[in-house]
Image (tube, rainbow, N blue to C red; front, side):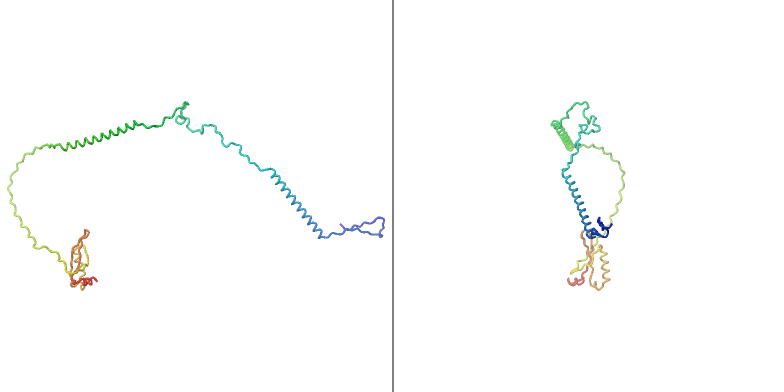
Length: 259
């Protein structure tokens, strides 16, 4: 489509006056700005429409008021079909259901103490104890009388003596002379004079002497000039034989022997 409009004037011939009415073309930049403004205006209009619709809906809800929740129309407690309560199996029996005839009976009264019955029971116990004591006393008296009465023992006839033939006496051998006692018994070894040194303690005398022989043979230089002294000792129910040696002039020499 052309922008130029050639309109010829009436009454004028060609070539006399050639008037041209043309609309100038718009600039491309201005057209773009116009479109942008149109888009912006349309967006604003849409946004306003959305805001108005939202406000109208919110206002409608506010005007409706606070929602009210009604309670459950059903009753909280339902009356049972049988007011008497649950049906128990076997309630129709006499032991549970009571009197079937419908006649009311009173319960038995509570138990009350019976002093007369208690007295009778205590009296019976006392009589039994008295009877037992009397029987024990009678038995003791009978035993005392029996002990005091003289004892009667049946005499048994002694058998007649049987005649015994006489036996000729037998010559008794002359007693043998007793052995003469030794004039002198073995006397224990005299206690050594001066200091002594104990070497060992054994359970037998023979063991003590054997130990002395062994040591004197093993160390003849040490035991030269010394003699064994074996003595018996009892301690805590046990018997020991002490092996000691003498032949020391003083305690210092005995101490040197131990070293």
